[in-house]
Length: 324
Ligand code: UT7
Image (tube, rainbow, N blue to C red):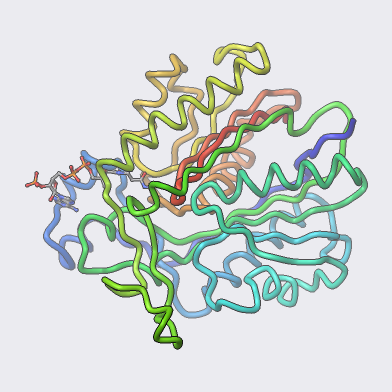
């Protein structure tokens, strides 16, 4: 059977850097609190010419270049995002037009912070059926557009950015296995309202604006437990141990979540890729940005086992094993 293998990766971060000192001027917070509780020191905020699809397109172009694949060769283009700049057409259709991927069919996928993992799993299944397919998968967010910049519980955590990869079929390497989960019953712990309804019968009460809202402490607990279980399920299914993994690329939400997860899994800290200090939580973009950085830093060697895990709104969560 053919597996989905990554041919090339790319990423794009907005120019503007927002520091903890900057946030001290905006809400009642401190660099000390943010650093101690989250590990985040800076995050990037999109500006002029940096709409979601534009960041996504720049990341995609870098991934295509690294893969040695032209935009016209792409058969399927998927953008994992929860912050498209328009509700319709999809961000993926804007990217298609921007980069000239005219032979692709294109759509968005929303599984919040787990969107890129869900997308990888889906790409793996398309490729198992049609191995010659070339898929461009992007995780891209402009969360800054959906922040309540007066809410210190959330605005310090999130950032903007995009990451991408090009996938096709291979026999020896690629996606090995994946465990995905959702639990919609806990949605109120982490959600984002939609724009106000034009149909009065469909108005949602207690609307606070089209902002991201979160009960941080509860999300924290669920995130650690869920990602741990997802990884353990995957390791058990594959009958391998955490020591067989060369690099763990987790969703970057909070350094304390990652430390707890590392500890509970008994993993070597050196094997956990971390860049949350630089970019904060970029939701669906966090794993592909980290993957691109790890790749460009040459931390991935052919044959290495790479483990991904994520947790986000929905709730959605999961784990994936890939042989690089
Ligand atoms: O992508 C997946 C989705 N998101 C996440 O995974 C995030 C998960 N949650 C978290 O990362 C953490 O819960 C936070 C970083 C959001 C908060 O950290 P915490 O240690 O859980 O703090 P807390 O919410 O329990 O708040 C502790 C205190 C509170 O004050 P009191 O009630 O103890 O007086 C908060 O009001 O810290 C206060 N606080 C702040 N103080 C300074 C909350 N936010 C801030 C802030 N600056 N920005």
